[in-house]
Length: 216
Ligand SMILES: O=P(O)(O)OP(=O)(O)OP(=O)(O)OC[C@H]1O[C@@H](n2cnc3c(O)ncnc32)[C@H](O)[C@@H]1O
Ligand SMILES: [Mg+2]
Image (spheres, rainbow, N blue to C red):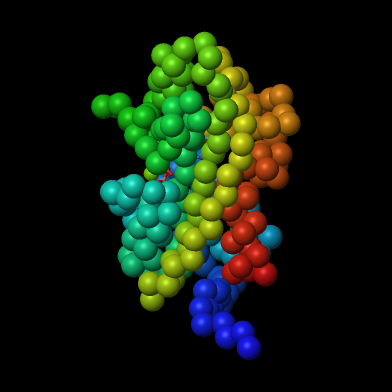
C-alpha cells in the first residue's frame, strides 16, 4: 500500500476579481500611465491617475520589482480608498549582471530631474567598459500589482527579451525605448507604433496574466 505522506502541492488561492469601476493608476510616469490606460480600455475600468488625486510618489525602498510594485499599489489604495494598480519595471542587461534592474529610474536621476539621454549613455558606457566581447542581450521586466483598499494584493510579472543598440533611435515611447530592440524586430521600441509595443512588451505580458487572473 502506498501512503502519500507529503502533500507538497500548495492549495491554489482563488484570485479576487476586479469589478468594473474606478481604479487608481499608482504611477507618476506619464509614459506608463498612457500605456496602462490603453491596456485597460477594453475592460470597463475607469482609470484615474495618482497625480490627478494629489497622491505623491512613495519612496521605493524595496530591493525587488515585486516589493516596489506592491508598496506603490498599497500606498495609493490606502490614500484613495480605491483599488490601485502600480507598475514597477526596469531594464536588465545580462553583461552588467542584471543592472540597472530595480534601480533603472535611479540611473537617470540628476539634480534637475531625470535625464534619459544620460541614463542610456551610462548603460552604454558600462557595457563598453566590459570590453568588446560583452554581449548586448537585455530584457525589460514589469511587475503589475493590484491592491484593494482592504490590503489584498495580487502581482503579475512580465518580460520581453531583446538587445541594446547604440546610438538611440526613435521618438515615441519613453525611458530606455530608443536603445531597446525586441528579439525578432529591427526597430527600437521608440520607432514602432505603440500598438505594436503593446502586443509584445513586458507590460503587455504582465497585463495578459493580470487579465487572465482577475478580469477573465
Ligand atoms: O514608479 P512610477 O511612478 O511608476 O514611475 P517610474 O518612472 O519611477 O518607474 P519605476 O520606478 O518602475 O522605474 C522604472 C524605469 O524603467 C524604465 N522603463 C520601464 N518600462 C519601460 C518601457 O516600457 N520602456 C522604456 N523604459 C521603461 C522607465 O524609464 C522607468 O522610469
Ligand atoms: Mg519609480
